[in-house]
Image (tube, rainbow, N blue to C red):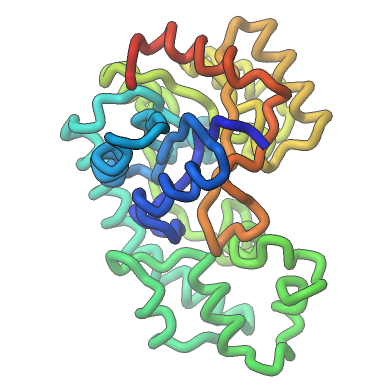
Length: 297
């Protein structure tokens, strides 16, 4: 547990469940004092969150999680303290939604080709903006497979090997980069993402590096050379060895360290708000961010 959680998603992300207000209430309930709604390529939830907590004893940090790529590898970069009213963020989100609407149809076709069926009506209920992600397909497919007979879905049911976070695990297994139902969406480059964040007063942080690049030292060095200023060292996805690896790398390279759960709600039920320990370094993390950004709260 930690009293900071600088990475969570509202329902303005296509895979987020809760409203910004509900996220704030969850944070207060769990003793979180500093939080950041870092939606995928979207800043629409920030103002709603800020307004709601005006008279509450909790601090929100404006943030976004940008999809981007380097050398063909897709990454997530968090931008903290951004000017979230800048038009560029609306432009980035609109571009991604337009591409995802096209990719969604192909994604569903590829999943069905694998022998995984689902009802279109269920998809319509789950979809936002005409976007259908792997997590929605998983939920619809598991609902359709009423007798739990499809062998491809067995790992995601109760007591299965992938049942801890079934919907997102399905996405990672079938729809993620390099998987059989992957459909390319052209993201901005890492360099562009870093520039957008810096140009709008923010600080760019590489999200959950253990999830995207593992411990590829050469790739990590190239990412840092692109202008990333810190690492999300303390993450729901990192084991102790990975935490040690990224913490040591961050200290050696004078990088910021951050802590975030990547809470989404039902798509990642095993992840809870404030559930990531940062080894009692909350004060140091907030202090260093404050130095970089000035007073953003």
